[in-house]
Structures are given as C-alpha cells and as structure tokens.
Image (cartoon, rainbow, N blue to C red):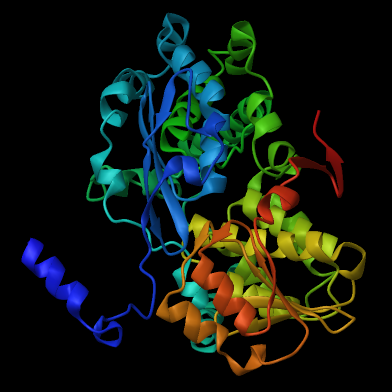
Amino acid sequence: MPVLCCALLALPAQAVPTQEYEIEPVLGASSLVQPALLSGPGFQVDPHVEIRGYMARFTIDTRVGPIQADSVEILGDRIAELPALEALDQLTRGQAFLDAADDSVTKTAKGIGQVLRHPIKTLVGIPAGVARYFGKRLSRIGHQAQALSDRTARELGSAGNPYPRDDGPMTEAREIDREESDGRSGTNKHRWYDRTGAELEREVKRQLKYGQVRRELAERLGIDPYTSNPHLSERLDQLAWAGSGGRYAATAALGSIGGVGGIALAQGSQLNEIVWKLDPDQVRERNAQRLNRHCRDNLLMRQFLRRGTFTPSLQTAMIDALDRLQPAAGCDALLELAMTAQSELEARYIVNALGLIAHRLEARAHGGTLVTIGAGLAYDSVDGERVLPLPVDYLAWTDEVSRFLDNAAFAIEHKTVLLAGTATMRSQQELTGRGWNIVVDARERHTDRLVSRGDAVVERR
C-alpha cells in the first residue's frame, strides 16, 4: 500500500483522474438538523443519514419501534407526533379500551407492539427521494396522467360522482395499504359495497362515525388525521373504531391523560383546520370551489382531487399556497405536475415549492405565472424574475442536476434559485457560474409554523 501511495504522488497532476459529478453521501444527522430533533425522552435518531434523491432519510428509534422519515420536514413531523403516539399507545393498552372494543379490534390492539416493533415488510425498498423532478420529460408523464384521467372519467362519469373511490366511506382507514404492507393482500376480504341491506346501512353509519371520531382524536392531539406514520395511524384506527361503536368514549378517555393536546400542532408543519372539521368528501368539495379561482380545466381539477397521493391535508395545503401566491396563469400546468406525484414525499415537494415562491416574493408574488420546465416547477414574477424553488434537503452536483439546469429555459439573466436545505460548495459554484442568484437554507424562513383557520393564516399559539 505505501508503494501505491508513492506511485500516485509521483504522477503528473494532469494524470490524476478527477470526478466530474458528485455522489450523494451518507451524512451525520447533526449536520442536517438541530440537536433537539436528534434525541429526547423516548426517541433517538440514527446518526447516519443517507441522502437519496436530494432528500435525507432518517431512522428514529422509539419505544414502540423504528419510524422512518424521508426528509427533514417529515422528521420534524414525526418527532412532534411522539407525545400523541405515546398517549394513544397508553389508551389502546388500557383495560377500558380492551373491554369495550370488538374482538378483532382488541386482538389487533394487543398485537400492535409485537407487529410494529420490527416492521420489516413496510420498510422494503428505499424511496428515490425527489430526483424525478430534475428530469426532462414532464410533458410525456403529464400526458400519460391525462390519458388515465380521461379514461377514468369516461368509465365513471355515468355514475354522477366526480370523486369516485372504490374503498367506501372508511377511506381514512387505509385498510388496503395496510393489507399490502403486512402481506394480507391475498385474503378474501369483502369491500364495503359487497354487503347488502340492513347490514350495509349499519356498517356505513358506523364507518362514517369512525371517520368523525378519528378526526376528533387527531384534533385533540394536534396531529394530521391523515398522517402516514404507521404506528400513529394504527392506534388512531383502533380507538376510532372502538369509539364509533358507542361503547367507548375515545375522546373523553384521551382527555383523562392530559398534557398532550396540541403538542404536535405547536411543533409540526402547516395544517389547515378544515381537515379536522370536514369529512374527506366535504374537503374535496370545498377545495374544488377554491381551485376554480385559479384553474380553468375542470377535468384536471377533478382528477387532481381524486389523487390518493395528495391526502385531504396535502390537497388543502397546496391550495392554501396557491391562495397565497395568487398566480395570474399556470394553475393547470401545476395540476399536471401534481398528478405525476407518486408518493407523499413528492406531493410535499410540490406544496413546499409553492410555499417557497410565495414567501420569497411576498408582495411581488401576485400576478405571476407558474411554469413547468422539464419535470420541475418555476415561477415568473410580474417584474421578470424567474424563480426556481428547490425544496430539497441536500443538493449535490449530479449529472441529472447539471442537465436539468442547462435547460434552455433557464438561459435568462434575471433568475433566482431557492434552496430549502443546503447545497454542496460545488453546486453553489456551478449555480453561480450559470448566473443564478442563490438563496440557501430558505426552509427556516418559509416554515413559520403556521396553522390555517378557514381561509386565513394565523400564528400558532
């Protein structure tokens, strides 16, 4: 080995190969987030964080098992949810709940700890981050989405329901997703519409009550009722299902614990309170009316509002951001881009991109144009600035980033890139060399911890 080192040192400088592009690294968690998010009562974040698709993937060890967080933003949400998770875990193990719950609910509740302490099957496959938004083929992806939308609309249009869902009133329960994740997708499970007569009527009423109880619990805890946290969602399901049967006062039981109400709300990311007050169909109807202020294509709007990738919470957050931005044009292009999202992480990327633009431009935001460049989103302000929001955790200078930013649409003089997280020195040098103004670490200024009250946005207490 010493001989090899000497031989390398003896080579002329021009003979030593240089790496043209950067490789996404494994970083220390402390280089990405504040210490308060790395450890605390009942949790510890793995110090090694893989950057994949420009987003950081964290693993949180908790008392109930490991939790994955696929971005800095989601990490903050998961840590904020921990007091609520512990409260629900305590209730689902209590004798009052076990006595009141159905047998199936009781068995599931008793097994939660064992099943979720090692959720290997739910963690297979590492997400690709948001790399797809640095691609070149939005039009092709969008056209495919549009073709699917047209076909679906023709097939379902005769039913007279603009928001068809085939899993019935208990959409919030996400039974299908859980069955797939724990290997039960092949079981002979009848869907809600397979039942008939009085049994169906009773079941529908109970499931509607279930949704209401679930949202009430989420509001008391200050959490998103459509959270993707598997531990938290499972326990919400159990308590809401028991409460919908009339033998267990779930919200009253929660009040007996105390000390948890609103904690996640005070620490988590932006959330509009209508997702607690209204059921999913009502949220969609309301959001359809709000989208009409900005968009023109009714078919695109209906398809976006049916997209399961955007939960009612994310749907509403995107339209909240649109209301802040007030673009004069480009809403339909935004919907085309949003319909290509294939994961919660990608949906959040769209929402956060709009938020970054609105915050950066502030008073200048209104009246501009949303544009899609490649597979990314940009905004042309009324004074001629092209703004490119990149709500990523860590921007390395990769081949795809280079090709994306070399798009002819960016060959203009007045342009600014908004980086929510951090960028390597190489990335900053390349951006500057291409004439970009750079705003780094814009996330802290954008994520002001606000909660929407109806159509207004007010500071959280």
